[in-house]
Image (cartoon, rainbow, N blue to C red; front, side, top):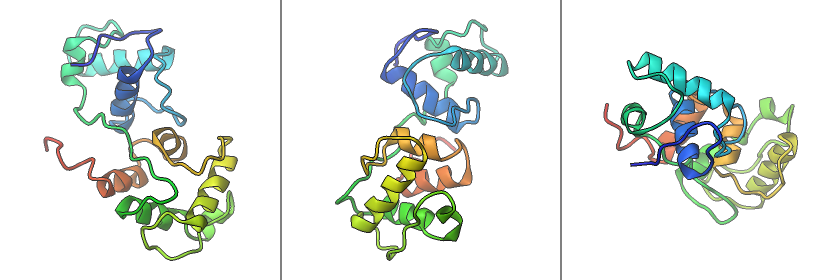
Length: 168
């Protein structure tokens, strides 16, 4: 069971809460999963507690954690040398004219291999987003780029098998 967290808390349990509430469209950071429990997260926790018949105190303790969706895993991290369906999905989303308006589109094959062309497009995306140009797509970058709960995010998480063990 995660620890009790509230306004001012920080760390991995706060990140778990941020991800779970964002994915459930209870919190929209449109930015990084910071791990810092700020006022916007407190308001979301209070709203979540109200909607779930819990004591509304803005504190995520055992009763609140029990109602938070169990889907708290980090989004996958991919980088140069990574392979698989998540990379293929990333390549597909980075491909095309629509993204070229904002950053350099990926113009290579959709082969699931994170090579130099994928890395170049990712670095261009990171520059557009004002992030360090590391070429690594991690939890922070996924949530910076995609709206939580969007079709894009759900496709990514399906490709990464993060939806496999959810109680439907």
